[in-house]
Image 1 (spheres, rainbow, N blue to C red):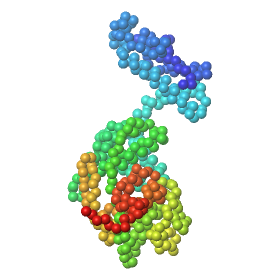
Image 2 (image 1 turned 60 degrees about the vertical axis):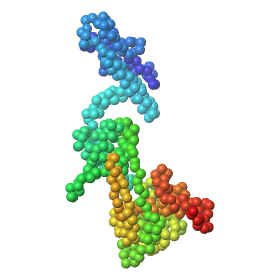
Image 3 (image 1 turned 180 degrees about the vertical axis):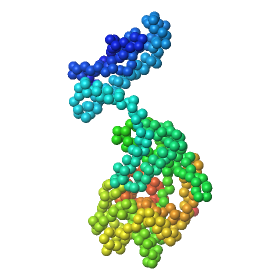
Image 4 (image 1 turned 30 degrees about the vertical axis):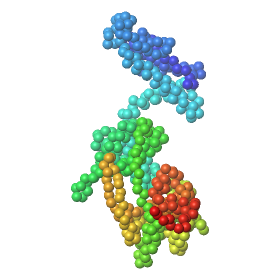
Length: 449
């Protein structure tokens, strides 16, 4: 602390039953400023040396204050409350000094006390004046402010979280505010999401969300609370200790034989699927997301590589061309743009048609959980393939062909090996490839005994 603080009794101003108000005196540079605290105490309960109140047992207090009715004698709890108020006021002064110092603002004793008055004046109003919909309005503003810098899909998640929070508030009849969102709230909100259901046209009731979607919603809420804190919003910090359990997801990617089936399709009479194949296979051969293929320009393409600023991460990537990606670019060399464009939504529909035509239909089991309930669904593989499968295919096939994880991450722009590792774990072929590359292939088949 830069200045000094002293707590005194204002003996000239006695209150009810002879209780005396407490006064805080702050001194800095020889200038003293007085600030009235909201506590009163009998002089008999005050230690002027320690500048704190102390408890006196009832029997002894009666002797010191014989004319005072018993119910006016101060209890141990009341004494603690008085001292707590003193400590809080001193802590506020230290905080005010800290802000002035951090902002390199010269300050006086008068400035510190004025700031303390404003803090104490605002505190009682905080809960009363906070609008009921403040958190939701703040979320709306967050979405609006990030429309030009964030992917549309990621902002959709924030809209979903807002809808879930509003549904929770209505169902639980409990206001959702920044200060109310603590660890206990996260536990209740998670249970609420698990119990949410939907009804189809036939009247069948099923869980609305699986554990993976719930984990994403909770993680998004944490991210939003972190942002609010950075913007100076008062947030209950205990939410940070809530642990989100994330389940491992299946990696849906094409095998080399499936990619070959797509490449070998005769689509000479189907322009729609022909363009779809070129765009999808281009992603399989480069690892590029749809957003980056959509922004691709001629100036991004050199003789042997594509160099561009990735839209999602705003980082520069260099993707070497290979026989497949180069041949597709050559096919459209007369277009103004390097590749024809189809909307992402339509492309995802067309890719299913493409993969179905290529007989990519082996059954794939998808397992999800809603709370502890295990939900199993069986799908033909083509139903599970969309444009982003191309990026996953590039990663898995590159690893199978013997490229190291570090080399693939350098091309795709992955920075987190923890999330990338699931690709490394799914293929046994890679072990064979890298073993043969390092030690050579066996010249003859071994006889199995």
